[in-house]
Length: 118
Image (cartoon, rainbow, N blue to C red; front, side, top):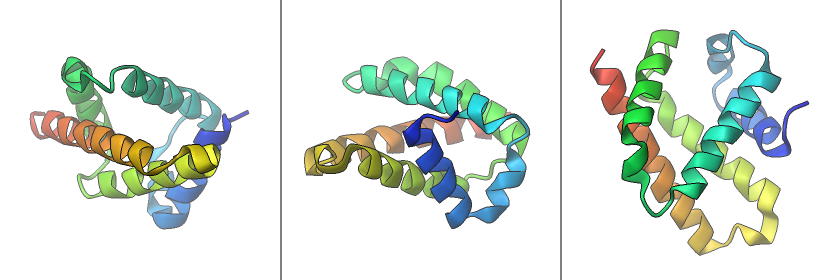
C-alpha cells in the first residue's frame, strides 16, 4: 500500500503528465517507498542540502537513463508540493511551502546536473 503522500503524488503526477506513467517499470508501492525515503532524507538535510549533492547527481543520472527529461522535473515539483499540501493541510503553511520549494528546486538542479554528465 502506498503511503498517503506517495499515493497523492503519483495520482497528481499522472494527471499532470499522463506520459510519465510509462517511466515507471516497478511496482508503485515500491516506488512510493523510495520517494518517501528520499523526501525523508531531504527533510532531515534541509539545513545542509549540499551534503546530498553527490547522491542527487547519481539519482539524476539514473533517472536520465530511465528516460526522464529535464522539463519533467517541474511537473514532479508541482505534484510533490500539491501532495504535501493535501497531506499536511494547515501545517503546510507559507514558510513550510517555501522551505520545500527551495529544497525541491535544489534537488532538481542537482539531479539535472548529474543527468547532464552521463
